[in-house]
Image (cartoon, rainbow, N blue to C red; front, top):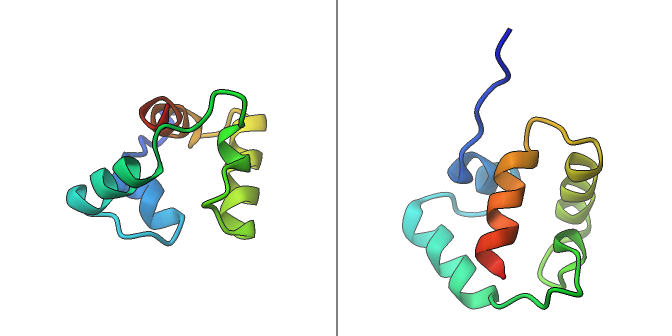
Length: 76
C-alpha cells in the first residue's frame, strides 16, 4: 500500500495557514533565512500546536516528513 503524498499546500492547510501558492511563497519570504542552529519546529513563528505537530512528524519520520523537510530547506 502506498503512503499518501502530501503537498506543501496540504502541509500549510494542516498547520492552519493559508494554503494557496502565493500565501506559501509569502510565508517563506517573510520567515527566511531561518538560522541553521534553530530546528524548524523551534522557529519562533509557530504556535504551540504547530510546533508539536512538526516535531512529532519529524521525529517519527511520518507521512508528512518529506514535505516538512522541503519546507525546512526552503526556509534556510
